[in-house]
Length: 112
Image (cartoon, rainbow, N blue to C red; front, side, top):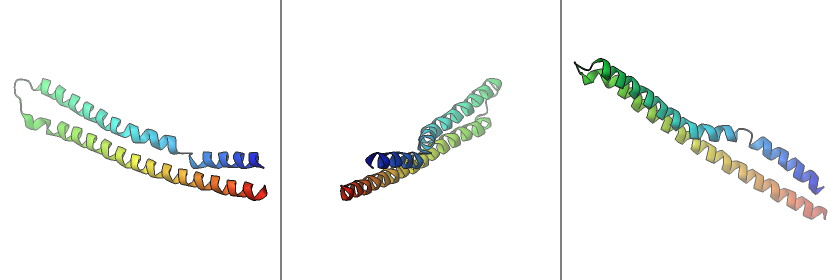
């Protein structure tokens, strides 16, 4: 009987934790993607700077700098929200697992 409870609980835990690794990966990856966008935008600004070497007009770089700032901000914001969401889901899953263990223990105690 105990083995049946353990097997059933392991299957339910696997179902509860199904998408958590993907969400954890996204929460760590999104800020890196934002910074990658920043680097790409600043690289384009650098090449534009090289092309306009004799006649420098800094107004021509505003789009690249704006794009770099936006990509950084969006990456950080997306990472924060996904990390918060991930932590909330993990807390709920842990609570459900604890309650399942409590119920299984009570049932086993009653049967003994």
